[in-house]
Amino acid sequence: AALNRIAALEPKLHSFLCVTAEHAISQAKAVDAKISAGEEIGLLAGIPIGIKDNMCTKGIPTTCASKMLADFVPPYESTVTQKLAQAGAVTVGKTNLDEFAMGSSTENSAYHVTANPWDITRVPGGSSGGSAAAVAADECTIALGSDTGGSIRLPASFCGVVGMKPTYGLVSRFGLVAFGSSLDQIGPFGRSVEDTAILLNAIAGYDPKDSTSLKVDIPDYTQSLKPDLKNLKIGIIKETFGDGLDPVIATAVNKAIEQLKQLGAEVREISCPRFRYGLPSYYIIAPSEVSANLARYDGVKYGFRTPDPENLLSMYTDTRAEGFGTEVKRRIMVGTYTLSAGYYDAYYLKAQKVRTLIKQDFEKAFEQVDVLVSPTAPTTAFKAGEKNADPLSMYLTDLMTIPVNLAGLPGISVPCGFDDGGLPIGLQLISNVLREDLLFQVAYAYE
Ligand code: GLN
View 1: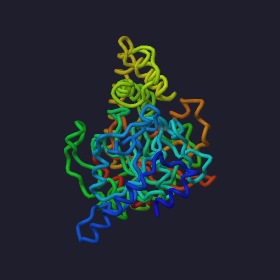
View 2 (view 1 turned 60 degrees about the vertical axis):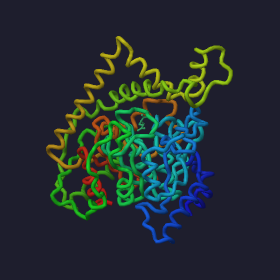
View 3 (view 1 turned 90 degrees about the horizontal axis):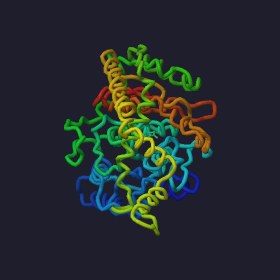
View 4 (view 1 turned 30 degrees about the horizontal axis):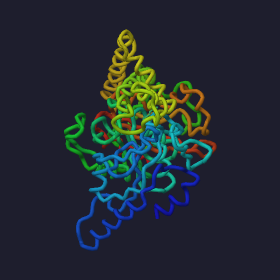
């Protein structure tokens, strides 16, 4: 059914970079055989899933939506996809993204633009736009994305689905192509909070192959799906309701907050005064990590190589000039600058200090409340092409999601209504580290 749906909708949506029909059918048959033999089947047996194309899948192309990795077929499997296979999930394809996950609209893909299923003239958000669109359009039941500054939560909000960025270190990053290593985290998409919780159950857990992986016991997240919020304290982040917020979004989020009160939560306003420095510090820290992480694409070890170089140096430079797109190059240049001798202290070190201050704002907030609430994004899905010429206006889309990554916290976006044009709006919930259970509880009771 998922493959038929993909065949019918892909000509308009372009959620996928590669559809793995044969692979999916053989995985589904394997589940079928287990059922016939009376063997135990996994948590996700037979469930169609889409994988963002920056997670390595053995024998299946992994392009990161970049020309640089156009022909890259990984010789190994990422930990998450290995866990999914063990759980019996059926991978229907690799989903579209902004090149190397840098962007907020999926328009930075070197291959094609993904449409928002609610209005195909609009973007699905990014960078995990393919995964969000595929789940919203029922091309698959669940999907994986990655979130460095909002790339799961933003497309979830634009596409009217649930998307979660777990605590940094909860899900293994082994086999996830690195963007900003201190910020990157893999997380689940689903059409319901329950589906999202089940998918997190399947992928969370310690992995010795990822040095930042947390050695913690993983609870069963479906146990947190309770219908009321008595004894819970929820804080509204005051600063996220300022200038630039579309009034329709403010209304929808305020209505959602009223509902949280009715469900028994005690709600108060909380101030995170350094929140607004999240965006500028992120746009120093993330590009700095990009400039280091993307140094490996040199035309030698793997990936694209310029076809006819004059000498060794031009082989490197031409490979990178031809292989990377505009936004990726912009980040490499910014990051190389902010890490260079003489500028490091003024930019990179300063940004790291600001990062600590933002963390402290959250720590203070969580002394007073259990969960924080804000809009996920300042607007609903914008038109394709609308923000391409102005990178700064594109960057501003992530204003509310970025501080969560800087602090390593979990965050979830749940649908909370529609704007006047029928486009979905997202509600963001944030908790302290490893309190995904609280996010699922609040999101489930609200939904
Ligand atoms: N839009 C942000 C960026 O371009 C976040 C991307 C992400 O979370 N992968 O960096």
